[in-house]
Image 1 (cartoon, rainbow, N blue to C red):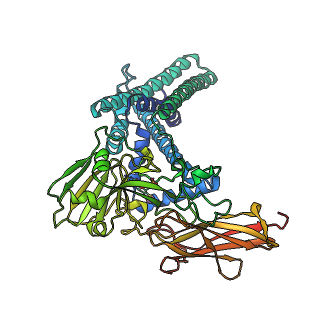
Image 2: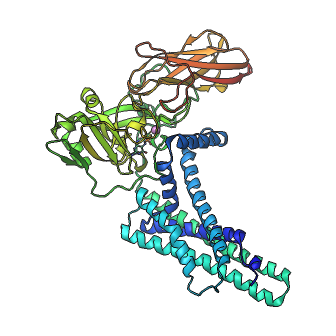
Image 3: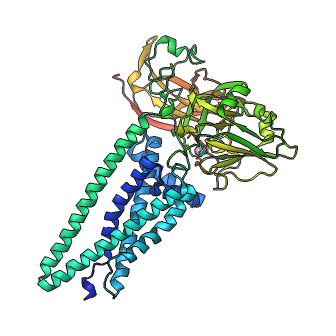
Length: 554
Ligand SMILES: Nc1nc2c(c(=O)[nH]1)N[C@H]1C(S)=C(S)[C@@H](COP(=O)(O)O)O[C@H]1N2
Ligand SMILES: [Mo]
């Protein structure tokens, strides 16, 4: 038969794509129903781990830029979804390329296609094998046993390859039947008809399957999630009683309308993870403290609660990749125990210099014992906002280290190992700061043009936001309007000396287009860095400015 009439590279690409969509649905359902690995997200997570830090940062920055254009106020919320979509798209692309290659190779074959789809099954396994290896490497969410997962993935990829083979054969047979008819137009049409039918079957399966998945997912999510039973009403319509719960309830300075919430609801707290989904934690989880210690320990959360004094602190956590005025910063109440106390019980060897803290998702970081010995606030935390940590935020245990960016503070801790030598932690190895000390920044959240008010005959425009300097405190915030002088703002009593500070400045305004700028000083009077610096490697610095048009009518 004339090879030009055999199905070619484009049909292969199309068929590859059409079969990969249902393949993803099958994998997704396997995950939901039986805790089997969901390879597309594993593929993405694997890339995140192996890409060089610079390239990865470039990619993340690009994504944040794009999201900032489309969803400026919800960048963090949307970012995870965007990552997941990229994982699916990449997986689909692999299917398309594999389909194209398969058809190209099959065209070259001279023997007639067999009935058992051996070439397809082999192709499916060739594509599947590296993906299975990757999945086993980075998947921390599958609960099925590895052997079951292996068999499942082998079968699914083989079936996908057999499907490719089946479609190839079918297209080829259509061709030869049409050869007898000698009417080329009919030939083209029926091949097209076949592909259209295949496409609608694939689409139907994909839609129904993902619909089913969505339903299963929703019912699965509803059950275990603990409602936030906090009695602090964060929406602002709290009863007076509830407001008294916060330690700065008697603060006289109120946030300017439009300032971000001083106490971040856990569900709105930013997330930065190396995985698309939180790792699944073993039911018999216990923290293991090992290495250069005389008496290694295994501690459950209950052990921690019962054996050590509980400490509680209002804390602002921020990500080193948070941009000036970004939302990758949040404040909540942390509960746990002092790491110093716990370490007393393991009898560290005098030669131990660092703790290597490892997590259920493969993340790890080194903390120096010198730092731990001088700071009793360093906390193994099991609660946020008075509730056990959520799966996203590190259940069952995470560490808090004052004055450091989040990248130094593992969530989902499984092991603490005392070691003699320092080594690079997960993000340090990828080019980020070795020390990751929080940099001092201030942000304008609002120029409240809708809340202009009159006081003593003057019309005042509230301007406000936050300033943050790790545990060094904020002593002063200043605002500059257009080319005016820097003016002192009012500082609201913070929730603690480990949180951001809410500031406001009530400006006797003039109508028109204005530019607003803010800067702050640390507790000891050190001025914040005003030079613009990007997030990598040490965290962003610079003066935040904002333009706003103010009209006199309001
Ligand atoms: N195990 C683990 N811990 C981790 C991370 C992670 O990916 N895995 N991300 C770190 C980073 S970069 C930050 S900023 C904080 C974010 O904590 P959050 O997601 O609870 O806000 O967790 C840190 N701890
Ligand atoms: Mo981070």
